[in-house]
Image 1 (cartoon, each protein chain N blue to C red):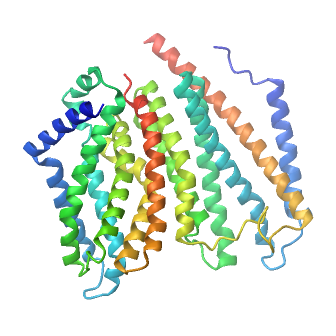
Image 2 (cartoon, chains in turn yellow, purple):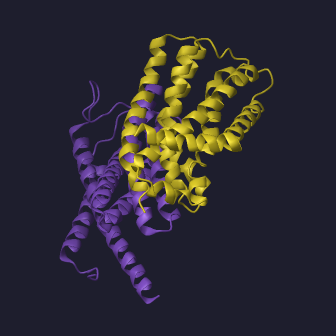
Image 3 (cartoon, each protein chain N blue to C red):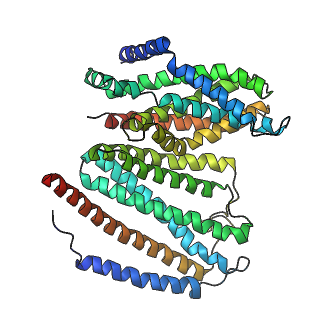
Length: 223
Length: 230
C-alpha cells in the first residue's frame, strides 16, 4: 500500500515541482494577508502582538484552503480522475496520497512564512521551537485531513471554490481554537501543561477525523 | 408510488394531539409555572429555548443515523429523511439563536456572549446551513445524497469536539439546571412546565418531520414523472 501511495505522491510532487503553482500561490497569498492584517491595527500598537497567533493561523488556514481547492481540480478537469479510479488501488490510497501532498505543501508554506511573520509582527517565533513544531504539525494535519476529504466533495459542486470554505470552517473550528490558544501560550512562554492541554484536543480531533475520512472517502469517489 | 393520503387517521390524531399539547403547554408556561425570583418573566423563554435546543440535537442525530443508513443501504428514503431532518434542524437552531439573546439582554446585559453553548449553536447552525447548501449545489441527485451523507456524519461527529474545545476556551453560560450541580434546580411546578414543553416540542418535531418527509416524497415523485415525460 505504501508503494502505491508513494507513486501518486511522487506524481503530484513532480507536477508541483514543474509548475510551482500551488506552493507559490499559497505563499504569496499568506504574505499578502499578513501585510493586510497589519493595516487593521493602529501603527505601533501593542495589541498586534496579542492578536498575532490568531492572525498567523487565519493566514495559514486561508492559504491552505486556496491550495486544497486545487487537490482534485486537475484530476477532474484533465480527466485523470478516471485513470486514478480505474487503477487497481483502494480509494483510500488516493486519499492518503492527496492528504500527504497537501500536508507537505502547506507545511512548506508555513515554514517559509513563519520567520517572515516574526519579522512583520516583531515576534520571537522561536521561543520554544519544539513545542511550536508539534502544534503546527498536528494542527496542519487536522485541517488537511478535513480539507482533503471535503475538496473531493467541493470539486463536484457547482460553486467549487466557494463550497470548500463553507464546508471546512464550521467543522475545523476546534483545530482553529486550539491552534491559536496553544500558539499564544507558546509565544507568552507559558507552562508546557497549558500548551499540551490544547494540543491534545487537536490530536484527538486528528485521530477521530482520520478514522471518519478513512471510512467515508470511498463513498465520495464512487462513480 | 401511493399518493400521500391527507386523510390518514394517524396523521390527524398526531396533529390534533399536538394542537392540544401546544395549548396546554402555553398555559403551563405562562400561567402555571411560577415567576422566577431574580429574572422575572423573561425566564419563561427558557421553556422555549431549551426544548428548541433539544430538538436541534435530535434533528442532527436523525441526520446522522439516516446518513449512515443511506451509505449502507442506498435507499432513497434515508436520504429524504436526512434532508427533512436537516431543514427542521436549521429552523430550531435558528430559534435557539434568537431566543437566547432575547433572554440574555436583560439577564446578562448583552445580546451576545461567546459562551460555549452559544458558540456551539452558532457552529451547529453553520453546519446545517452548509449541509443544505451542499445539497443544492450538487446537480446529480445520487451524488448529492452521498456527499450530504458524508458531510452529515462528519458534522455530527464534530459537535462534541467543538464543545470540548470551546468549553476550555471560556464559560459563563448558566450551569445546567436539569441534573446540574448543587444550587441548581427548578421549582417542582417549573419542572412540570419544562418537561411538558420538552414533550410538546418533540411532538412538534415528529409532526414537522412526517409532513416534510411526505412533501419530499411528493416532490421526488413529481420530478420522476417529469423525467418520464421528457
